[in-house]
Image (tube, rainbow, N blue to C red; front, side, top):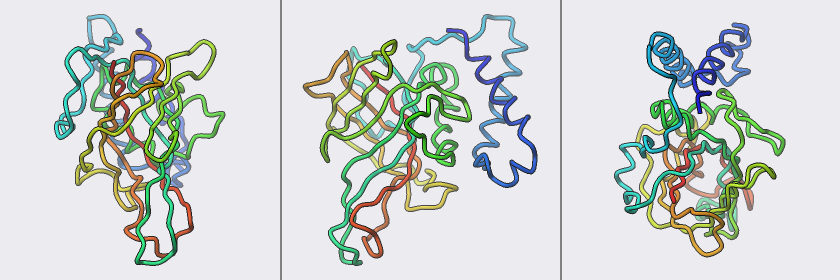
Length: 258
């Protein structure tokens, strides 16, 4: 694939076309993270224009987990990256009552997954920044086929079969049948202390980074899934003032190995 220079160019064009008053009014969720994201995109466009070599290709062998994921088990020998996605959705919780004596209990998540495989192959710094940017963008709807600001294409959907079984359905259209990863948690680590806490960096913190194993029922070659670079998603410390069920917005990067 050689679409990446066009992709990053479109990012800069989109922010350049946005009226300054719209940016100031936060209609696009403008933030320091988004400004830094566009700055790096602009830098890469300059490099591409000056380079005498061919445009970047989508070589998945170049993809690696972020260095901070060293707190999780390394991908088992023989496994390679199949897809990388940016996830945007909600972490879901329940409360037995609405008092300070009760703590929220996680009951799953619901998210849309957008294909960032080629971004991860060429620009890992943009990949690590992506959740911090998209956490400030409105939640995708069922009809959201792309994710701004990079207009990444829909790869699939993340949900839970029950409260402990994460599912990643990557069969989105008749033309895009990438399989279904059904998983269980193998291990976790706390998100870095500087992780974005929530929308506009306000919230209760970023959910943990995870390493998941796939289980029976998986369709395709998937063997493990990593959730890293999380932003937001943590619930309040207690259920005081909360409803029986509630959601907390989050974003994260997902690496699918097989």
